[in-house]
Length: 181
Figure 1 (cartoon, rainbow, N blue to C red):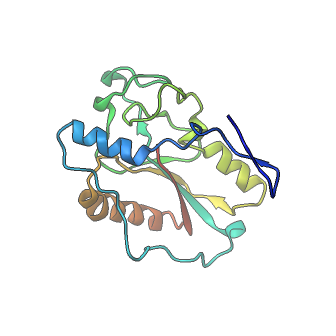
Figure 2 (cartoon, rainbow, N blue to C red; figure 1 turned 45 degrees about the vertical axis):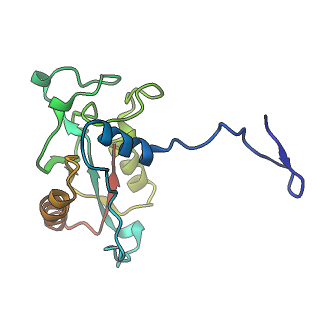
Figure 3 (tube, rainbow, N blue to C red; figure 1 turned 30 degrees about the vertical axis):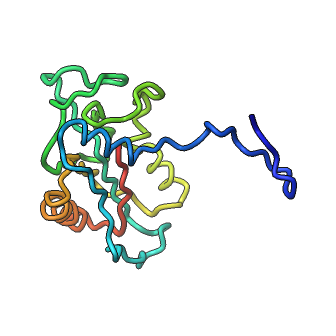
């Protein structure tokens, strides 16, 4: 049942039409596996800085959690079941000259309502090249980078993030777009 807000004539969504409570679902999932309750990263101060260069002139890196395809590790294509074997544990880089074969079977996502068939949802190189062509961003970095999803705050902050930052600096980028899967 929908209702209308009298002062605006706006139609309210039905009671059951609510966002998926993914944070609680993640906590419940890890508890069911026997882990401690999952604690989301939450910082008092955010370690970001304003861009020094207008985005229309900035060189931008793409960082994704998609995994390089490894055929020996089983099914990893669109719609594949969860495949823990396809996980990766070290930062990787790939050229942005062409779209690399990256997949997301190694992460948990709603496989009932999506299939991962559109690579632009997790490796939006084509859309970023469109943004360059339209003048919205200055240039795309020479490489995209992969951020592991090993679910360890310590390893992420002490190992993966410094390595990603090193590679971004090596590529001379001004900003990064993070695309989690």
